[in-house]
Length: 74
Image (cartoon, rainbow, N blue to C red; front, top):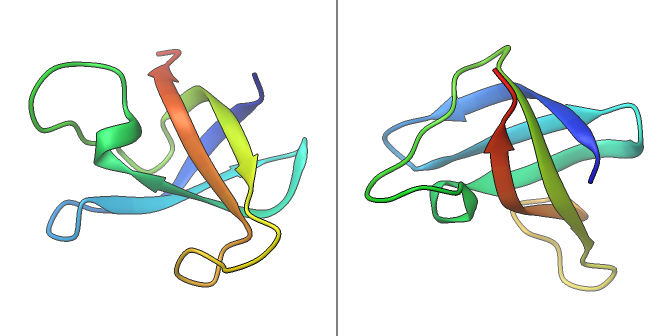
């Protein structure tokens, strides 16, 4: 599981972008991929671990990689 940092997050849209030295380019993250009950959110600068899916084909909002199983390390 790569370690990543939250680069941007939109509470209104429920998604944001993670960055990791282990993955080139940003990683798209949706609130539903964050482990925990109810509506979940992330904060810019927050450290997390996650699984990363390489979409290869159709991109998610312009990002090749999508996060799942996001867990805060802070």
